[in-house]
Image (cartoon, rainbow, N blue to C red; front, side, top):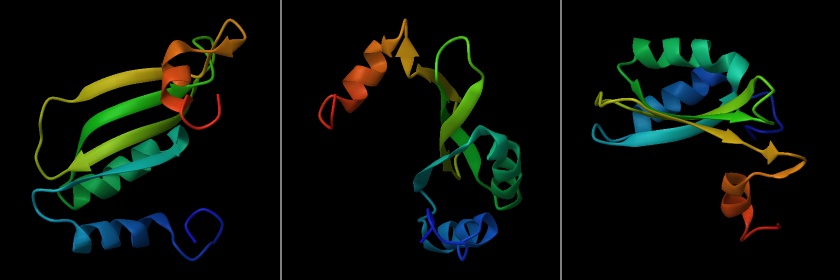
Length: 104
């Protein structure tokens, strides 16, 4: 429903997370990078902080397109990393390792 429907919007999803996640828990989400600032504000308003983030770029020459964020109630040192999908017209080593079991 979240991927193909219009019934689950981000505020509704955030309320579900707030109501279902244990106080010591964390959750991850994959979103377009253009939604990161909005999503971070929703999280801050409910006491969640970004604990880890993976920026996803097509290549080192492209802008960030998506990101994976891990959010929780406990603030730790923010861990940041970047995944380049391609390097020199082939999948990067990180991408290859990540997807190896699935189809590469």
